[in-house]
Image (cartoon, rainbow, N blue to C red; front, top):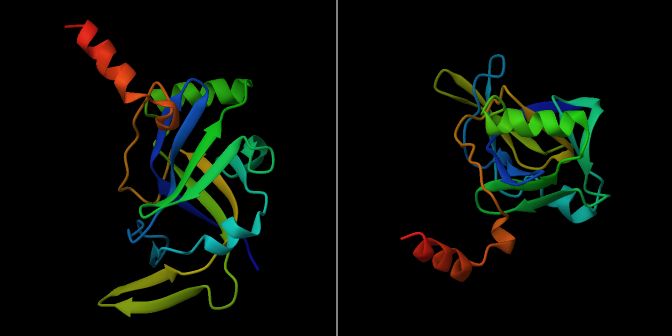
Length: 179
């Protein structure tokens, strides 16, 4: 099976040295991918996520620009109603530092993913004058940070701490102290 690459957008800085976002968004149409558009359906990543396969995080689909892996725990993937979410601990490399700045400046606006489609994993149909491919089951190989996402419906936001570690009582008291 050939490796296919898609862009999905939605990336944010969650903490110093950590990025978070969505590598794919369910039920949203991509831009034109060369004569067709694509829609990722909920459950498309279930088999990959449950298999424990090592998924890499890369810069622009470049295997030499490794940012993290699920095997090492530096890339964490989650599947929810919105799509395929991720958290990535950036390496202290030049690439990691540069990428953090590019995300903060919004030069990098999203992410992409590389995958293979097993037999029966997609469905094609003509809708009016548009050819549409639905991804139903894919073998996820990588997620990629990119400045040119094909899925344009999510946004980039900078946060100073991870939502997992956020204590809202502490935030409320800090807010009250600023009044």
